[in-house]
Amino acid sequence: MKRLLLASTLLASAAAPAAADIAISAESKMGIVGGDLYAPTDEAQFFNDLTLTFEGTGETDGGLTFGFVIEMVKGAGPTVPNGATAWDSEEAFIEGSFGRLSLGGVDGAYYTRVGEANLGASIADDETLHAGYFAGDALDGSEDGQILRYDYDTGGFGLSLSLEQDNNGAGSDDIYGLGLSYAAEAGGVGLTVALGYQSNSNDDLAGASVMADFGNGFQAALTLADFDAAAAGADFSHVGVGLGYSTGAWSVSGNYGAYDFSGAPDQDGFGLTAAYDLGGGAALHAGYGDGEGVESWSLGMIMAF
Image (tube, rainbow, N blue to C red; front, side, top):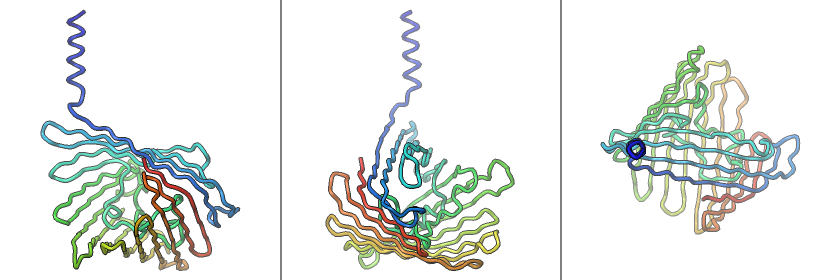
């Protein structure tokens, strides 16, 4: 019996990871929202949202880092019934001097490098819901949702490659992505320039961005995109501009976006945010979005744990 117990203990010790770290973080939002976006009524309504993030990392004997990231979201508001819970994303990765290889519900290479023009936040993302906003993730998740992405950064230069397979051979096409970025400082201004391309052989998305941090609280963003779609009349070009400013506990931002469609009326819109940091991970947030006659607004608190 003692020999069996000793053998079981040794086997359990051999199977256990030599060193692993597990971290849990959370973000909670609460407040009120309203506007035409929540038709048929634009009366103020309650809103809450909770995101739990689980992160785990380990290291092999040879120095290779491996790990996972999982986000779980539970929210309630005008368009989401109370109690609805969903996995927002899940990712497994390995990382070393060669770069980082991720697989799961991650962003494609285009969005990873080019990003978007929004420089603020609100509890309900009103600043990104208006008719003129384009986030740059138009093709991500349109197949099986499992994206394989490779990232490498060195000396200010960044490279991302991504592949999302078709729906298990259901007649769709794989989605390939490429993203390039370069960050440098010029005259005291931090600049990041990026280029991106993503395609499924039927639809092509190409774009670029310039992000600037002036070091005095001011930030600016410019995004350009061109989408060549297989569907008739769905082609468009887009321009997005964002500005942000922070001083003390206050921060404000605004963005404007405009679509030029080849087969539909053009559309544009703008979004605004304001926030006041209360300290300790809590902040008050207000947001507003307006595009093509449809408005939305929110007011509440975001708490980080």
